[in-house]
Amino acid sequence: MDLGISGKCALVLGAGGGLGGAIAQTLAAEGAKVAVADIDVEAAEKTVAEIKSAGGDAFAIKWDISDLSVIETNVGLIEGQYGNVAILVNNTGGPPPTAVSGQSPEQWAKFFQSMVLSVIALTDRVLPNMRSAGWGRIVTSTSSGVVAPIPNLGLSNALRSTLVGWSKTLAKEVGGFGITSNIVLPGRIATSRITFLDEQKANREGRSVEDVAAESTASIPVGRYGNPQEYGDVVAFLASERASFITGSVIRVDGGMIASI
Image (cartoon, rainbow, N blue to C red; front, side, top):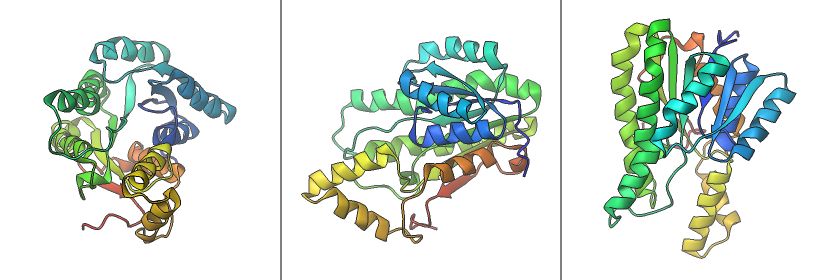
């Protein structure tokens, strides 16, 4: 299937590895020119090297998404290299495990800026050119906690849920311009973030990491953790010409794990 994105400029946040890296590699394999953004520029360069070794076109850009002041400069760099951003993949890091109660206002404000406001501000920066072009794709990666809150991930559950309401509202506002806006939810995908969460749970409960992982796997109908590439494939489809009638949606990539309908 031709996804119809060859030559289009894609910006992928948090693309130094894990889900973001898989998304960047998939988009590049489909012919997109990919700006690989990450706070760890060495990790971003590694993703770029993998893309180039497979014949793709990408460049790395150091990006601390909690710093809103760099949005204009960084988007300008991308536009100078590849032209206007046609595909934006919002993929931010998550906060540490916490209860939802008892967190300081400063803690809430810190992660609201890095996980929510950064996404909104960056999207607002690239939207005018998408409107002018009559085409655009905004895909925002959140968490399964937005539909089934995850114990001890209170900040994440609450803040990422904000992006679901934002994305749905945005879809209605920009749909007439040929722009789609969708949310993607990962289940248990085998990334360093999931390993970290398994380790944290094991430490809290005095169990082995292997026992925690086995328990998690048992809750997944397909019987395994997902592969980051499987997640990247879904995002690439949503970013494609073929997905032009999918917008305002919340897509689960979870192996059937999320219990809610």
